[in-house]
Image (cartoon, rainbow over all chains, first blue to last red; front, top):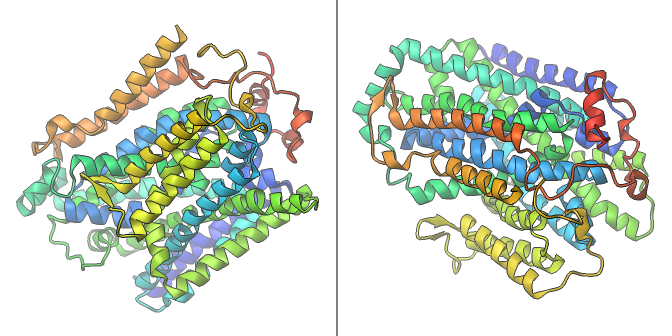
Length: 494
Length: 105
C-alpha cells in the first residue's frame, strides 16, 4: 500500500465527514438547543449509533485488542456487562428520567438539571467543572491517539504534531459547522461502517487460518490459560471493578449523558435500550477475538505496538487494512468531536452564562449559539497545544477519566430517586468522592486498591454514603425545588 | 402492586448483571465450535438480556421513574431560550411529537 493511497483514504474519509457536516449545517437553526441537541429530534438508529460511535474510542480498536492479545479475551465479558447491561439499565434509570425532565424544563446539561432542582448555581458550576476536569485530558488522549496513528500509518511522513494538528483543525471546522445533528449523522455512518468492517476483518482472518476451531486450537497450544475463564490478571474483583466503574462512568461522560436529552421520543429510547446488549456483542466479540487469536498465530507485536492493525496488515489486503485503520481513526475523532461539543456546552451554559447573568449581562439565544461555537475552538485548540507539551499528570487524568466520571453517578442517582437528598448532601457526595479518587491517584497515602477492588469503586461507595449521611442530617435549603423530580402525590409507580 | 412489580424488575436486573459473566464456569476451558464455552454463555445471555429489556420496555416502561410523563407544566412559566424550538418537526416525527409534548392521547 503506497503512502499516497493511504493518505487518500484518510483524507477522503475526512472530506466525506465534512460534506455531511455541511449538509447538516443547512438544516441547523441558530439556537444553542439545536447546536447541542439537534433540537431533541434524534431517531432510534441515529441515537443508538451516535451513542455507540461515541463509545468507539481508541480503546475498542487498539488498547482493548492489545489486552486480549496479552491476557486473553475475557475483556469481552467485562465490556458486555458494563456497556450491554449496566449501561442499558442506567439508560433507563438515568437516561429516561433525564429525558423527561429535559422535555419539560428544556435542560441541556446535567449541571443545569441538578442546579435547578437544588436551587444552586454553585452546584451547577461544580458539576460542570468536575466534568471538564476529566473531559479535557480525555479529549487530549484522543488527539494524541489519532496523531500517533497517522504517524505510524505514514511511517513518520506526517509527524505527530502535524497529524494531531490536522485532525484538530478538521474537528473544529466540522463541529463548529455541523453541531449535534451533523455529528450524529456521521457517527451513524461510522458506527455502521466499523461494525461491518470488524466482522469482515474477523471472517477474513478466520478464512485464512482455517476457521475458529483451528484458530482457538492454535491459541490453546500457545497459551492454554487464555482459553480458560479467569487468570491472575482477570480476577473477579478486577473484572467487576472495571465493569462497574466504566459502566457508571459512561453514563456520566458529558457527550453520552447529553444524548439522553437529545432523543426524539420515548419510543426511540425504548428501542435503543433493548438493542444495546446485541450491539455490544456484535462489536466486541469480533474486535477482541481478533486480538486474542493473534496470540496463537505467530503474529509478532512489538512491546508498545497495536495488535489490531498488525493483524489486518498481515492477513488482509493492504487497501482493506488502510480503510479499517482510517475508520478506527475516524471513530476516535467521532468520540472527540462529540466530547468537544459537550465540553463546550458545559462551559458556556454552566460556567460562563451564569457568571454573565450574575453580572447582569443578558445572553441572547443567538449570542449563546455563537459562544458555543467559540467554546469548541478554544477547547480543542487548548487540548492540542497542551498535548504537545506531553504533560504526565494530564495523561494520568485522561486514563482515569471513566473512574472520575463514575464518581458522579451515585450522587446523581440519589438526587433523581431519593426525595430526601439535599443540596448539602449531593454536594458533599460529589466533592468527597472526587477528592478521594484524585488523592488515590496522586497521593501515596491513599491506596489504589482495596482487597482487589479499585479505588474507583470504593470512591463511588464513599460518595453515595456521604450523600445519604449528609442529606439525613441537613434540611433542604429554601431554594430547593424537590417537586421538579417527583410527583406531588407519589404513591409508588403507576 | 406497583412497588411489587418494581421489586420484581429490580431483581431481574440484578440477575441479568450477576450472570453476564458465567462465574460458575471459572477456570473452565472447554471449547465448543471454536469458541470457549463461557463466551457462548455470554453471547446467549446478552441475547436474553435484549429480550428481557424489550419486554420491560413494552410492559413496564415508566415504572419507578417517579414523575408522570404527563402534561407540560405551562411552558411559559419556565421558558428556556429554546421554548420555540419545536417549530418545525419532521413529518415522520409528527405523531411522536404530540406524544412527547405530553398531550393527552
